Image (cartoon, rainbow, N blue to C red; front, top):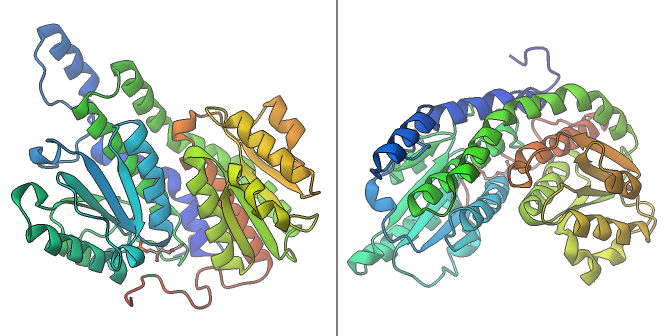
Amino acid sequence: EKQGFKHFMLKEIYEQPGVVRACLEAYLNDQWEQEELKIQNSKFKTQNSPIRLNLPADFYTDLQQIQIVACGTSWHAALVGKYLLEQLAEIPTQVQYASEFRYAPSPLTPNTLTIGVTQSGETADTLAALEMEIRRRQALAIDYQPRLLGITNRPESSLGDLIPNIIDTHAGIEIGVAATKTFSAQLVAFYLLAIDLAYHRNTLAIDQLEKLLNGLRQLPAEIEMILESQERYIEELAHNFAETQDFIFLGRGINFPIALEGALKLKEISYIHAEGYPAGEMKHGPIALLDAKVPVVTIAMPGTVFEKVLSNAQEARARDAQLIGITPMDEKDAEDTFDTLIPVPHVDEILSPLVTVIPLQLLAYHIAARRGLDVDQPRNLAKSVTVE
Ligand code: F6R
């Protein structure tokens, strides 16, 4: 069943190019460019999104806000989702831990879309937060009616029973307790949703849209390239950290949630203490933790925050920390900054989370495997958390 892989987690990491491809194929409208041209020529504007999510038309009317509830890795996917929904579709978006939202819900606002993200569709806190939101909205006037969307890998779950509108992430069953391929698939779902909303709200120019769609289609090959070229190297690198006690992960902008995800993967399967921070926050306290014994893994992708991230990493160098950079090849400034590079392909910053998360999953996996731990069944963790 593991098809020659030592653990399900590694097998599932390797399934990611196929999973991203499957999720895109399920929802991309391949005829869109031709149809769009026809429409431009005939001057008719119809609803002709490049994405086919099959959501009801009233999803798109007067949408003013989005709130997302989730736990754990799904919460990290939601943070990337917030970035995309705000930057591409220009919709104010809040992300809440389901377990917090239940006891301190945001004030109700009209025309709000609530999204629940749960790969298993069974996480008790996420389901309870959504049920509460449905009840409180139903008790109010018409424009407070719940607009609901579920993002899940299991449409046949309790989430599927609760919410009629579902984006199925098509990742296939995930056996390793640490979420990997289901996370990537959730990210794809958020790209598709944000592009669809951006299309309907007219917040993206056609050439930007085309660039994004082409970039998305290339992601499976980029992920494959990392798996092929970096896995052995990361496995060797992992040997250096078998005794390490603390790790810091840094990222900014759309890669801040990926720093959180890298830290979570490492702590849950290797039991090494790890923290993810927005790189700019280091100097406001956490930098005091650093010394030569604490490796700092920094995600540095060219774009809006590249130079800033590099200078944040240099602040850590002043503390003798060992600096590991997840960064594209042939970036001179990055090469000068980091002690160790894990090169990733050059991709647009906005698409980079699906690329930058891969080496972090491999790093966590190989450190845990090196320590001889039960990677697929880490202590104290269950695949779906059905207690509150
Ligand atoms: C991390 C992990 C957990 C889950 C969390 C939510 O690798 O697996 O943090 O992400 O328990 O699970 P779902 O997505 O099933 O609601």
